[in-house]
Amino acid sequence: MLTALKNREYRYLWGGQAISHLGDQFHLVALPWLVLATTHDPLQLGLVLAVAGVPRAILMLVGGAVADRISPRLVMLVSDLLRFLIAGALAVAVFAGQVQLWMIYGLAIAFGTVSGFFLPAAEATLPRVVGRDELEGGNSLMMIASQGAQFIGPAVAGTIVAVVSGAAADAGALKGIAVAFAVDAATFAVSALSLLLMHPITGFGSDNHPLRDVADGLRYVAGNATIRTMVIIIALANFLLTGPMLVGIPVLASQRLPEGAAAFGMIISAYALGNLGGMGVAGGTRRPTAKMLGWIGTAIFPLFAVIYAALGLVTSTGMAVALMVVAGVANGYLAIIVISSLQRMAPSNLVGRVMSLLMLSMYGLGPISQAISGAILQLSLPGLFGAAAVGLVVPAVIAYRYRSIWDLAAAEPETPALAVQA
Image (tube, rainbow, N blue to C red; front, side, top):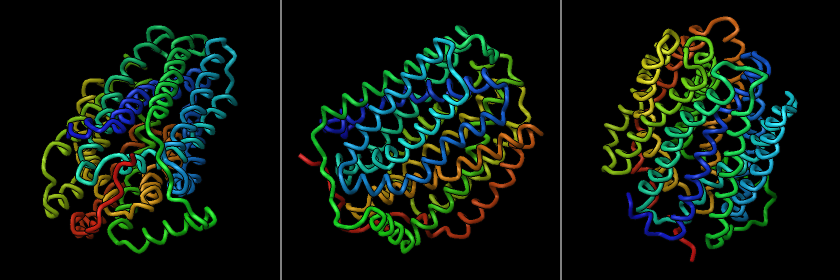
């Protein structure tokens, strides 16, 4: 797993993204707490998160095509510079006490738009930097950095918001939230610098209209039964999990847990800690057999159902933390196996588009999930988590019914993917 770090280009990519991931966690805590501080309305929180997800979902496929056409590194660099400016401007507005709800919606739309290009570009860059045999290790280190940031960042950010601004959402105490957004902005600057230090990565070019390139990617995925079914399962699962995670847990912390914002940070950190463990195992051990992977891919959904049902009833931060650690272990392990295999399976000139569809399956239905979650929360917090638990039966049945898709090694092409560019 650590051999990827011998690669100069990968070290810059990994280091910059590790710092940027830390800033993302400050954003993850600051944004929902800012919405609750200024509106005290769970529905507004769901709508803000949904607004961020709409442009991200719409532009994800275009972002993948652009990354394949020009340069995924360049797309990442421009994205980081734009987010540095946006997050910094909001930090100033919050600190000055001039923030308004329309500004929060503007931030959400802007970040969602940029993410539509950044996410597929980031997934397309790694296969261009490391060799085919290093994909599991490279992905593991990258996602371990992400989850490590999620483990440390939310707890630190939540503590800053709670100490500086007060544990309860209070429109008159926003300085801690301003600090969190300022940290987020600074990490984007560091990430942009690391990308500048990398050697250029050229795109594959195309004489087609960009929408034609998008259509080519869609046709490839539609014709590949393994990827097609995987995308459907992931989309359904994330529709059921995203809203309760991003909208339900902040409200759970605000309404039920005495630690408030700090509890929210600890719960998110616990999920990251579990992911760290699962990803470490996936990156440091041999890939399981297709039969074993099929059972793992099926069992993860009933496991999440039990955990979400329990979350709807907890009144203890410790119990919520324990539940999310278990969920993270399962999610982290499976994520590395699936992402690495899909990067191998896709032709080199289609990696950006294939990964954009994977990202779309992860994030595309998020806005709807978040908006629905905000509405349900006005009626019942346990009802939200309970409904998600029941719904997870659907992806579980599909994963069990089509267990052959988990034979990912058999679906990989014999020709190697494009590796590092000098």
